[in-house]
Length: 291
Image 1 (cartoon, rainbow, N blue to C red):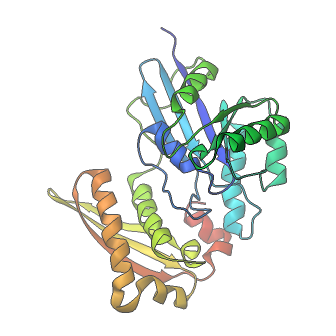
Image 2: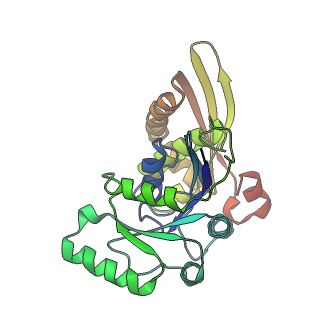
Image 3: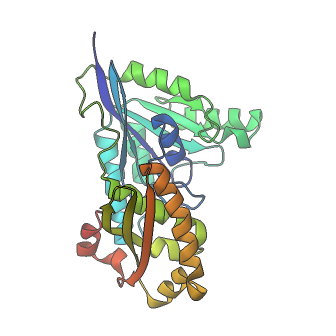
């Protein structure tokens, strides 16, 4: 029996639903999700294994014009995803009228890699609106196959799967068949904490944070985790902690629930906040944080 394997890379503007789609297709919550743009910072691999195929999905940061060195590094993840894909899932939504990064859009228009153009959030629009979007994107990207979807509701996922499996090349698996992702456990723990920061704080503060798991100790009945939340300024540290530590306590409680569900063990989570001045503009620090 033949075996198919390949990389299916998800790209698109911030906040169009790429991470929700990734989690739907993989069947696990690997990418964090909030209503804020630029939540995803890394390229996150989620692998689906069956007897006759292995699909390696990649979630990528939203396409943007960089304002920080961090953004430049995030765009490198997008650029690599456009190069090594066997299939590209280009995600837009019913509100978007074009990719806000001209160079990336032109690359998508010119590529010979098969593109499934997914118009997301159709549950929020009417038939006329959806038809107009299909017509618009057919004109802008005539080579792409267009499919309206709702990643949140799980609508039209099966046609995506059917087409992916048709397009994938015959190949042995790239990873062990038991592998779900190429990221270590500590990465997902730090992402869960960062998600709760995005959900609990406003304006610039969540974007100025970086989370690092400093200690992970697994006992027979409990896992003890110590994590550091880095911010750029002292004022941000005070905001993260909140009055008498109430805000960071909320983050810890919410994150601990998700971590316990993910690792299926009781968790004791300690959070600390430190200042790492202007880390988003420092090449050495960005490299240290995995960007």
